[in-house]
Each structure stands twice: as C-alpha cells, then as structure tokens.
Amino acid sequence: MTSHDLRSSKDRRGGRSPAPALLAAPVLLAVLAASTPGWADAAPGAAACTGCHGPAALGSAIPSLDGHAAEDIVAQMQAFRSGERKATVMDRIARGYTEEETRAIAEWLAKPEAARHAQP
Amino acid sequence: MPSRRALIGGAAASVAATVLAAPHARAQVQPQVVVVGGGFAGASCARALKQLDRDLAVTLIEPEAAYLACPFSNAVLAGLRGIEAQTFGYDRFGDIGLIRKGAVAFDAGRRRVRLDDGTDIAYARLVLAPGVDLRFDALSGYDEAAAEVMPHAWKAGPQTLLLRDQLTAMPDGGVVILSAPANPFRCPPGPYERASLIAHYLKTSKPRSKLIILDAKDAFSKQRLFEAAWRELYPGLIEWVPLSSGGRVTEVDPATRTLVTEFGSHKADIANVIPPQRAGRIAQSAGVADQTGWCPIDPITFESRLQPAIHVVGDAAIGGAMPKSAFSANAQAKACAAAVAALVRERQPASPKLINTCYSLVAPGYGISIAGVYQPRDGLLAEVEGAGGTSPLEAPLSVRELEAAYAEDWFRTITSEVFG
Image 1 (spheres, rainbow over the protein chains, first blue to last red):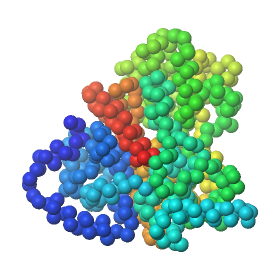
Image 2 (cartoon, each protein chain N blue to C red):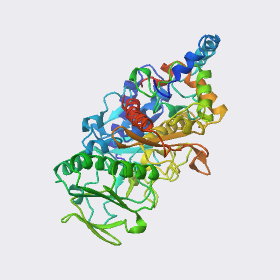
Image 3 (cartoon, chains in turn green, red):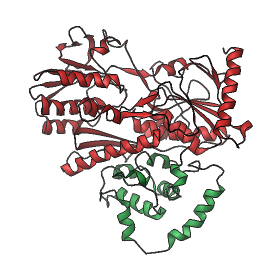
Image 4 (cartoon, rainbow over the protein chains, first blue to last red):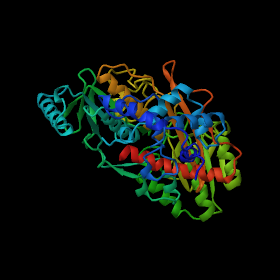
C-alpha cells in the first residue's frame, strides 16, 4: 500500500517463530505492575512517534504502530537506517536513534494499545 | 498578592476539581499541575500529564471556546480548504479540569496563578504554552489597525479569512507582496508555503498577477526545494527579494498599501505583512521571557531558567535547534509532561529525545518536508548529527504526492491526539 507499511514486512516473516506469544506474558506483567498507566515508563523518544502514527482506527496512510511485535519495529528501523527500505521521511528520522534506543522504544510500542492511546 | 477572599475561592475550586477528577483517588496527596494555553503545546501537555499519572489533578486554562490551527491555514487562504477544517473544540478533555478564563498574573514564589475573574489557583508545577505575540512595535506603521488592511494571517482565524477574501477580490494582474521576518519566528517554512499556495491560486485564477516576497533573511527553510518547485510550477510568477538585495521591510503605510525597505518602496494590491514575533503576553507577565522576547528553558525538564516550578513549551520557548512548529510543540509538551510527572513525585526526569517533521505544500498534491531528531546538549536542544534533513531535491512526482498525502494525515493524527 505505501512504502511505510509495516504489515507487509510482518507477513513476509509470517509463521517464523512463536516469539509474540512468549513476549506477551512479561509485557502484561509489566503493565499490571506499573503504578501509573500510559507512557510513564516509556523509553526516551517513544512519545514523539504518536504525533504521526496514531490509532489504527484513524485509517491514516501513515501506518499505525499498534499490534506490531518489538522485533518487527526494530528490524524496520534498521532497514530505514541502512537505506535498505525506501522511505520519504522515516530514513531521516531512524538515523537519529541508536540500536539500543530503537529497541527500548520498540518494546514500549509493542505494549497493548490501551497503554498508549488511553484517553484521559 | 492574592486577597483572602480570592484565596478561599481558589481553594474551593481546587477541591472541586479534585473531587471531579478522581472520586476514589488519594485526594490529599494529589499534586496540582496547571497548564495555561490550549494550543498544540498546552493541550498536548495537559492530556499527556493525565495519561502519565491519572492521580494528578490537571487543570487547563484557556479563555477561547475553540482553537484555530495554523498548519494547513495557508490552504484556507488559497481557497483549497474551509476554515472549519482548522477549528477544534475543547469538549473532549475527559477529567482534565478546563477553565475558560484568561490568566492575568503569576506569583512564582507562592505558586499561584490569578485568573481574570480574580480567582487564584494554586499549583505544584505550572506549564505555560502562550504561543507567540505579533510585535506591533517592530515595523513603523504596522499596528493592529494596519493589520486590518495589511493582514498578517499568522494566527489562524479572522486574519486568514481577511487575506483569503482580499485575494478573491483582487483583479487579475495585481501585485501581492508578502513580507517575511528575520529568525526566529513561528513556522520557518510557513511564509514560503504560503507564497507557493498563493502562487497556485494566482496561476489558476489570476494568471497575469505577480507575487513578491520581501525577506529580512538571506536564506530560508527548505529553500532549494521551494525554489526548484517555483521554477517548475510557477515560472516568472514569484520574485524573492533577500535581505542582501534590500528585502527587509522597515516601514509600512496602510493608506497606500506601501512597504518601505532599506532600498526603496513597493506598492501592493495586497500586502501580507508577517511581522517579527515574541513569546505570548503571558510569558512576559510570568517573567519567563528574557531580553530576546523568548523563554530560556532547561532542555530536559522545560523548566524556565528564570522562574522556579514554571515550565514553558511550544513556540514561546527557546527550543535550541528545534523550529517553532506544531510538531515540535506536541513533542516538547509530551517530554515536558514526562518531566513534570516525575518531578511532582520526586523522581528524576529522564533525558528526552524529540522529533520534528514539518511538511509544506507547494501545490495541491505536491508536498516537501524537513525533519530532525533532537536531544539535550550543552544546555540546549541540539540536533542529533547524521539524522534529519529535507526531502530529496531530485524526486519523482509520486514522492511529492506521497508527502502531500502524509502531510494531510499527519494533521489528522496530531489534531486527534491533541484535541481528542
């Protein structure tokens, strides 16, 4: 659909491993353990993503980041950084983040949707 | 400063807000964070604070019933979009305490803000998002009355419609002059996007007309991209006069719609004067603006360098390398909210990492962008080297079309995040 579409990459690696299920338990625990919901524990930089990447329900050409495994996001950011994946703006933005920063952001983004787009 | 009666009123209002906000929360220890200003920065910050910590009592002070967004307002004055697409209400702010009053005085020592009805509101931390004020003392002859003849249209609303209506009424063959200020000002690519979209209107509706940009600078944002697109789309229509060629306007005469520069004078059929700017009035009254007119801040917490427990976000702040944009305002507001939420719970704020992306439309379906990634360095927000930059100078039309589509969708996403 667009050069930004994360879902296509997900399909490419479809059925490769049960990683998402294994990840789900610690993520759920982390959310339950947090004394405050939302992005209090978000990695630095993570909050900036949602200025463009909104909830899936908006139907934007800019894809939602909801429902993506952390590994997916890390891989796509790496592909943007290296230029392997063509982009209009994400290549320029991805180069501003280290591997560690990207991973921390991706792990936060992979948390349940309610943790990020919760209405006050 | 506050009278006894006003203080009692303030306490009562505060308790009421607490009860409404979180009926079964720890009311006694609920820290009160007050945000002044309901634009991209302030509304983002209030919302983010409540998302970060539901037990915070968050109050948003904004006297207007609706916000008129500047991004895409250039499309309104070129007749490509209705003003209603720029208008956002405050009815979707959940349990954020919304007070429709103006803030008129600040007592940083006692941590109180006074409203225009005399009420005082106490805070643990105060966030100011006053935006910009247009300086009506900077260009000789350009005051608020002159702006009714020579609109600035640099705050969306009646001024946008005034300039639009002037363009609609102008006969073919007219001369439109746009005067752009020196840095820093709100929306650095804005004057050039505006010139582009006015040129689009002239080309399609009044092709014998001309547009002159009188500029107080010798360089501007996305310059090579704009100039290449102007040569391609609007040959001979736009003339850019830089500072070194006498572009700086020093004086205007609204009676004759004349703009005077250091090198001569220009008579316009329509004069769009974008004057120099400074932090909004509220920044001056809170004592957080310095001699430059803008607000120095700590780049991690956005706390004022001049007043304790007062934070400043958005266009009014000295954002270092970050441009004054709605995107920056939203990103800064979320970073500031994270810092404030930590500080009121006596936790150490984390160092933020911020993004800005500014799209400009050169024509319908033709978008270009500039992006940057920022982090604190040497007491300022500095650009992360190796990242950011503009759209490529050479690109197929499909890329320009994609960026125009992303521009529209960015606006939909950010306004939905900020205003609900």
